[in-house]
Amino acid sequence: MLKQKVLETIEKYELIKSGDKIVLGVSGGPDSIAMLNILNEIKNEKIINFDFVTAHVNHGIRKNAIKDEEYVIDFCKKINTECFVHYADIKKIAKENKKGIEETGREIRYEFFNEVMKLTNSNKVAVAHNSNDNAETIIMNIIRGSGTNGLKGIEEKNGIYIRPLIKIKRKDIEEYVKQEKLNPRHDESNDDNIYTRNKIRNIVLPYIEKEFNPNILEAIERLSVIAIEETDYIKIKTKEAYNEICIEENENEIVLDLKEFNNKEQIIQKRIILYSINKIFGNTKSIEKIHIEDIIKLCNNNVGNKFLCPNKNTKVHVKNKKIHIKII
Image: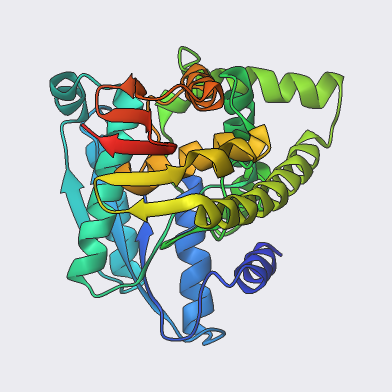
C-alpha cells in the first residue's frame, strides 16, 4: 500500500513531526497529486498531527498550463485546503537572466514556496520527487563528471525541504493515482527527448532495466545511500580539520595556518578549501577541480606573497605562513 510506504519514509527520516505546518509544492502531475492526496489522508486520519497548504506555479510555457492551474485549485477546494498560485513568464525571465529554462523554473518555484511558507507561518516545504527522479539525477551527475556529492542524488530531507515520495517508484505512483481515480494532469514536455533528463528517463533507464538490470532503481538507491554515508563522514572530518587550522574568520575572509594545512592529506585539503569558500559565499559555484588543484600547489610550494583568483569574486593569498581566502 503506497500510503504505508510513504508513512515508513516519513517516520524513518523524521520528515514530518507533530505540530508541523507544511507547504506542498503541487504541479498537478501524478507525483504531486499522489503526495497531496496521501498526506491529506494521513492528516485526516490523525496519524500525525500536522497541517498543510499548497503552492502551485504556472510557468506560462505550455498551452495547457492554465488547465493545470485550474485542476490544482479545484482539487484543493474538494479537500478543503488553501491553495496559493503564482504565474511567472519563465521564458522571459530565463532570457533576461541568461539562464536555462529548467534552472529558472526551479528557482522561481522554490522562491514562491519559500514566500508561501513565510506567509502562512509554515516550517517546511514538501516536494514530490520519487525514486526514479533520484536515479535520473545521479545518472545526470555521472555524465557531467560529478564528484562524490553528485552520487548522493536527491536526499530525503535537506533543511526545510522534505520528500515523502523519494523511496517510491514512478510506476507505483501512476498505478496509485489510477486506482484512486485522481485524474492528474500530464506534462507533455516530459515526453520531449530534446532535454537530457527526458532522454535518461525515457531512453537510458528503460534500456538499462531491460538489457542489464531489472532492479536498476534499487541498485542506484544503494549507491546513493553509500555516497550519503561516506560524504557525511568526510564532512565531519573536514569540519574538524578546518577548526584545527583556522586562525581567523569573518564574513569577508578566512585565514588558515599554512603549515598545518600542508600537513593534511590532500583529500582533506581539497575539502577544507571548498568548505572555506562555501562558508564565505554560501556556495562553491564556478570553483572547479583545476582551481582546487592550483590552490593546493600554491600552498604546497610555500612561496610567500603569491595569490590566485579562481573566479572574479575570490582571492586565495599565501603570505606570512598563512592562507588568506577572501572576497574581492
